[in-house]
Each structure stands twice: as C-alpha cells, then as structure tokens.
Image (cartoon, rainbow, N blue to C red; front, side):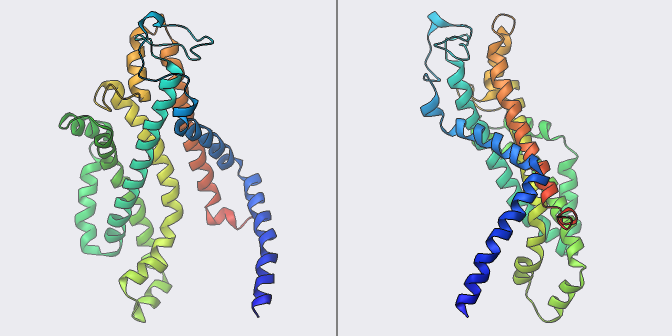
Amino acid sequence: MSTTILGASLAEQPRRRASLLRRMRRYPLPTIGALLLILLVASALGAPWIATHDPFEMNVVDRLQPPNADYWFGTDAYGRDMFSRTLHGGRVSLVIGIAVAVASTIIGLVIGVIAGYFRLADAILMRIMDGLMAIPGILLAIALMSLTRASVWVVVVAITIPEIPRVVRLVRAVVLTVREQIYIEAATAIGTGFPRLMLKHILPNTLAPLIVQATYIAASAVLVESYLSFLGVGTPPEVPSWGNIIAEGRLYVQIAFWNILFPSVFLGLMVLSINILGDGLRDMLDPRLARRL
C-alpha cells in the first residue's frame, strides 16, 4: 500500500512541475518582478561585502566627485562614496518595507476576522477603522513622527498604523462572504468551535488576497519612508536611507546630479519590482483564472 502511494506521489511531481511552468509562461510578471527584487535584496543584504568604501567615511578632498573608477556612483558633499551609501540605503528600505507589511498584515488579519465574524464587534471596530482612514496616511505618519524621537522602528510604527485599516477592510470583506457559505453553517451546526472554524475554513480563504495586499503595502512603505526622510521627519540623518540621501543631494543637484540619480533609480526599481510581483501574484492566485489552465 505504501509503495503504491509513493509511486503515485512520484508520478504526480512531473505534473506539478509542468503546471508550475505553464503558470510561469502564462504569467511572466511574477517571475520578472521576483528576479528583479531578488537582485535588489541581494545587493542590499550583501552591501557590507559588495560596497567599495565605508558608507560613513568622509573624504573632503574627494567631495562631489563624478562617477569614476574609484567612486562608481561618485561622491556626495562630504566625500562619502555614493555607491556604498546607496547599497546600505537599500537595507533600511528593505527592513522597513518587510516590517510594515508583516505587522500591518498580522494586526489587520486579527481585527478583520473579529469584525467580519462578530456583528457587534464589527459595528465598533469598523467605525474606528473608518476614522483612521479619514486621515491621510502621510499626514498621520508625520504627526506621529513629530511626537517621538526619530528612529527606524518609530518609522515602522508610524507607517504601519495607516496601513492597518486597509488590511482590516479586505479581510472583513472575505470573512463576511465566507461566513454565509453553506459549509460554514454546516460546520457550525455540528458543533465546530470558533478556533477550528477559523483555522480550517475561514483563514485559508484570506491567504491569497492577503499575500497580494502585503506586496503593495511593502512597496508603499518603502515610498512613504523616503517621503518622511526627504521631509526630515523619517529615519535619523546619520542613517543612509534612500530618502536621506536624496534629501542631502537635492542641494547640489545642479552640480552633482548623481547624488539624486542613483538612489532614485534604486528606489524606483525596488517599488516597481514589488508592484510587478504583486500584480502577477494577483493573477496567479485568482481562482477564476486558475481554472483556465
């Protein structure tokens, strides 16, 4: 019996690989976005080994040098290597993007499930979420940052709070739809407890839209962090984030445009790759499109 099951499992593997290849050919966007994102993430994580100079080392003699053999992306007004600072800036954006996406998704999932399943809690929680959504996210983040001391984790909290209501509304909509299905009523009728009902029947239906939403949140968080740092209310000035680098370089844009060009290109590629990955995952995880494969 076990040999038969093992043989069937081995026979199923080529079919799964063929199905995966068909999906990749039909939806090339996730592959393109994932490859581009992997390159950016690898460059950020490998910054201590890839960087040609110390990102904090100042050399006034070489200030505002254009790109050359010694300084691939040129230098800034303090003689710091722009290539090394750009790579290390990706580490900050990567940490903030992932942290905001994970935190807002987990918190929003919990609140959304409670609001979608319990009618009384729905009336209270959704009014709170509506109030948060009425405030522009960037203004709320600026207000929170102005009340606290600047740090990377304070930036994460300031960006996470405005993103939570969007996740809550998404999860709530899914739970409201699933809750009215016949199999949920049947499971409730036979005495299935709330924890088992959530884990087995409701939460699996939220995974696909949550994964897609998390990619958009990560891209938005990277942009918002750059906005805040550019305005001077984001990460501390000594932290080489893309927003800080661009903010410092704008003063010398007419004589040293590379101080803005390279971090802006990396920032744009990071956001673009995450959005492409999210769009592709949305198509791949859509059950209506999956049936056509």
